[in-house]
Length: 160
Image (cartoon, rainbow, N blue to C red):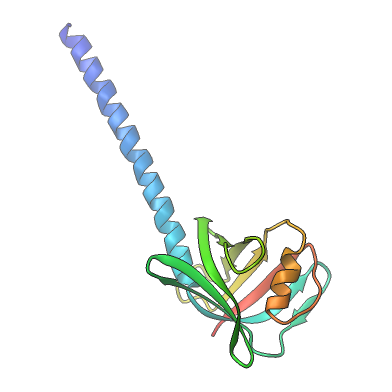
């Protein structure tokens, strides 16, 4: 092997290593962002308003949705007056700004979520139901004490 071939082979190996390390870093930063956004969502949130396709419903009683973590497992609880938990289960965060309530309902509920202010002190958040199976919105609305359902469902939350 000539000196030029050795240098060329060495350069290719270095480029491959740089590519592998860069892609591994991308996965880690994506996971970190996903974890960071869920941490921002962690805590108790009061349901302010429920938005259906053509109407908005203000919640008269205090209904809370709590997100947290226990033993490296993410979880949620829905609490209605008189402070009874109506649903609870595990949460999976498949990617940034997307969470799935994997247990507690007949089928998982998939939500996109966003914050009015993109920082940990944000006091407002919005969850939009992305599940498209029949009955998903009705099941959630029943858990928060509202009847009915709609294809489009979003809830506005305020930090408790």
